Length: 213
Ligand SMILES: [Fe+2]
Ligand SMILES: [Fe+2]
Image (cartoon, rainbow, N blue to C red; front, side, top):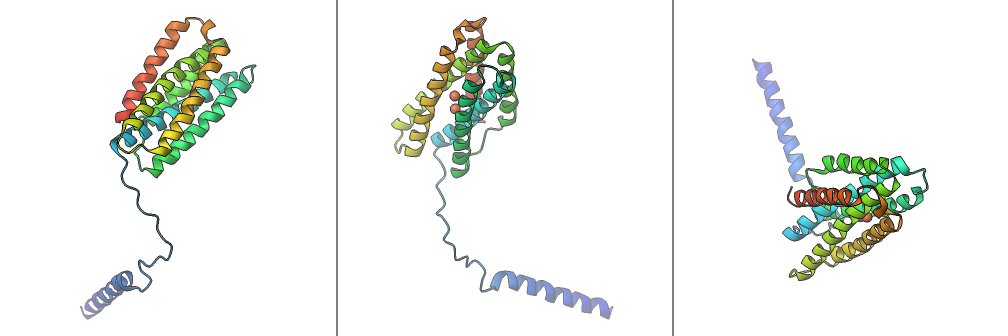
């Protein structure tokens, strides 16, 4: 009984020492490194823009990855690779922005990842021109989407300059991808109109979902 009381006493002493060390150390909370100021929460507009664009650039990266998996060694390989490299940079930039502004990524990211690769690879399996038709359809929707966002940002009370510059640059590169697709014979793909309309509808649906969840 005495031994039990004694060990309980030691336990209390140990605990109280541990607590006092944690709270009264002269070094506690005195990190000499200056901490960057906390960024304010993004506005609902910025939050929505970064989430949906992050999802879109993830999708674009995966579409071109799918195309490269099928056509990478063919005559269109270099052209597709060049566009893919730009999409990787777009994705990287939005990955930076999503962390920087503490924006929650879309919960659909794993699904877009798989669906976009399947879209890129699937159209590439239909041939080079169908792959280019896919590029034209996707980039048409993205250019319109980025133009809508640029208008929204410019009309907002405090336009985010970094976001404006980023989206303007990417919009121009997406337009180049669209034009490359046309130059490479997209319109000669079998069922061009039906194919591009279906892909555009899919992209617009993915955009609407990624804005919200
Ligand atoms: Fe992009
Ligand atoms: Fe693009």
